[in-house]
Image 1 (cartoon, rainbow over the protein chains, first blue to last red):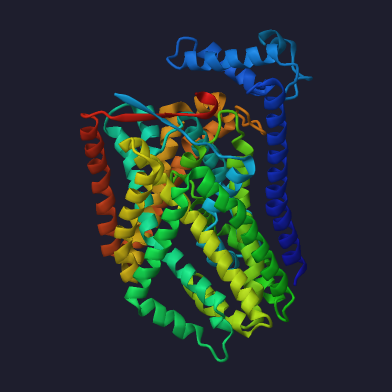
Image 2: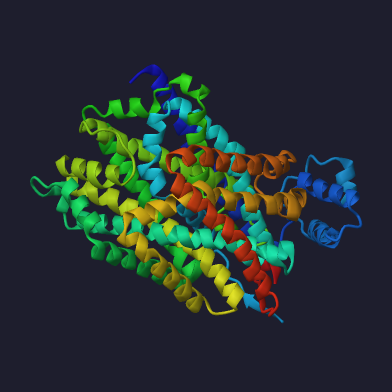
Length: 103
Length: 483
């Protein structure tokens, strides 16, 4: 086999099997963590800090939208979960003050 | 009146991931991808393919799965939630019909793979001087046998679907996908150790960079990325509707599904082409490659019985998990729309598909015609309709903020919205226009009749759904964490 074919073959293995395998392992581990949180405290916060900021931002832009109540409902679920539960699913150690205040 | 149906959920993360990747891994991964890769510049094709996979298939699958999880409905129920009780719900019916038509002829392919798996079990291919071409010709020419195998395929699909999402689809996929993986790995190891096998890998991986400048390479990569991942057919939407509220979608439903599916294509390259080149067989694709060339090669190999058995059983598993997923789209929708039991829905949808599939089983030209129409325009149109529904009607931003990033193992940024709103619909329109342009001159009758059928189908479906809404009997589903 030529060197270029070997390089492409190895790159394909990493880009496909490597990524798929990594995604499978990470996904399974996160699921385990979610299940453990559900078992120990009943629920966990549904949004990561970044995703929660997006939720807040959406409500700021569309406060009177017909879909705002649904978004507010999830905002409430997130806040309640963060206030009620000692353990987090997402990493909240690096959040800025604005997000911490919003929560 | 609104009736509530309790909704099943996937039993485990692994089960869902195997089911969804099994849905996407089908005949195309095994008998098409190795050849398409080698014919389109090897490594150059793979680069184009990876790019398109990440630019289109991954974000598209994320959106479709996320929409299904949000609405917790099948195709028509999802469109009703988006568009309200009006004729535009007919667009969901259009996609459903594409699925049913697709399955009507795909069941024949499942039937072929059952027939060859059976011959692998009884050791036909390892008989002395056995002529695989003669077997394929005899099988292709035997109408009753083809209808029989189509019926066996539909009976199997019916039996599995009767056990439900968790007890049927998930349980099956949790076994079949790992077995398929092991089977292909074993064949690949045997294949690459054959004398002359490296020429097969050279054919598949040797990069011819000039191909990256050719439009045909990108089109072939686009076709493989779209049709292999099943984007926009309603499968990801239906499977997503059985996810729980806080399940991850971006990593599992998006990246793992698309990349995992392609990983099977890569595995097929290792399993198929080293053997093809080691035995001096002309590289090809489709039924000829699997049922004639490879069957012949297995018969000549040491331990051929085992390799033929692994390959044809694996091929059958790949086809069966796809067939189940395509049929489930109809079953979920029928169950919700008719507010009936799963058993009745499975029997009704499988019965319809079996009946519609008989002509394709009897005549390969009908199968070819349906594949031509559905593949060239039906599926790109379905993807276009779903992406417009996600991007514009539901609002891609709202879906991303509310659903896609909820419980996600991976944060999806704002850029995703642009891909779903503009990029994928534009590419779908481009594909349909290109297929029209290229086919009109070569096969004018097939092209015009196929397009006429599709053009008539859209207003007809809209009219049907508009009429149906005069007598509302709408079922909504609840279950799991939402209820």
